Amino acid sequence: MKEEMPERCISCGITLTGVGGARFPCPSCGTVIARCNKCKKQSNVYTCKACGFTGP
Ligand SMILES: [Zn+2]
Ligand SMILES: [Zn+2]
Image (tube, rainbow, N blue to C red; front, side):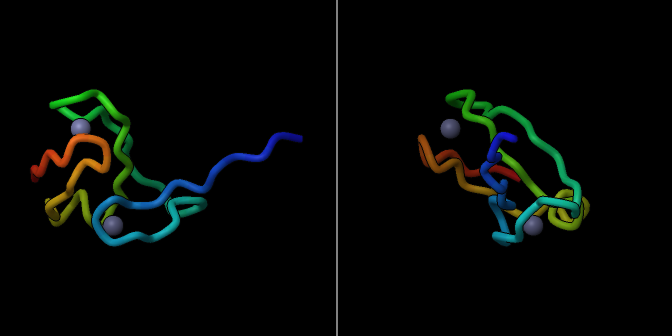
């Protein structure tokens, strides 16, 4: 039994457990960013927590 940190969408803050979503590395610093399918579809703006990079 291992505890996994629930991932949250970087744009809307929804917990991605059971929702699905995409994970991708920040283009600037490589920190993994998670987004839900809705925000991915709508190309919502995200901000990297680590370096402050903003992108669609
Ligand atoms: Zn979202
Ligand atoms: Zn970054």
